[in-house]
Image 1 (cartoon, rainbow, N blue to C red):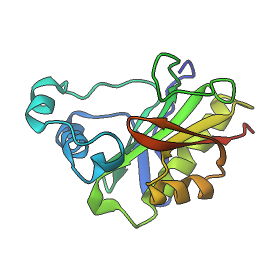
Image 2 (image 1 turned 90 degrees about the horizontal axis):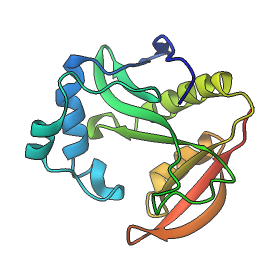
Image 3 (image 1 turned 120 degrees about the vertical axis):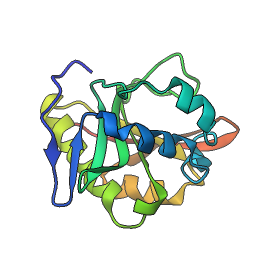
Amino acid sequence: MTAAWPPPIHTERLALREPEPQDRTAIIDLLASPDVGTYIGGPQPRDELERTMPDPPRRRPGLFVVALDGAMIGTVTLDPRDPERPDQIRLDLARYELGYLFLPHSWGRGYATEACAAALTWFATAYPGEPIALATQTANTQSLRLAEKLGFTEAARYEAFNANQWLGIRPGS
């Protein structure tokens, strides 16, 4: 992303901010969770994450830690799409992609909707008129419902990583 990193974004319940040193353990928990890994190729090995995760966690434009009462509960990403990855299709529709991962204890409370909506609002200001994509497995019904709530409409279905995938596009504003 080329837009300047925003100050923390605050919603009614959450803060979207850069990663901080105290987030390292929660990021490892997130990436090593079998529940979180269900639709993204499985969990990553905890011992490998412990060995390779930078301390403090890597900061980069487009990566937001989602915090509730100061504690990390997930991440939201707004990343340029990579034409070299097999799951990255239809770059003619959108050059950026929304991604999100949340710790299982935070599921079912509307945090993903709240955090993604806030990130998309920032994105629309930073990149006016730029459409954005969201890709998920068709079996991930919760993610499909979230995509609909956020205003994404189906643009394509395809096979990648031995699973049926759904690609949604949200027009720029």
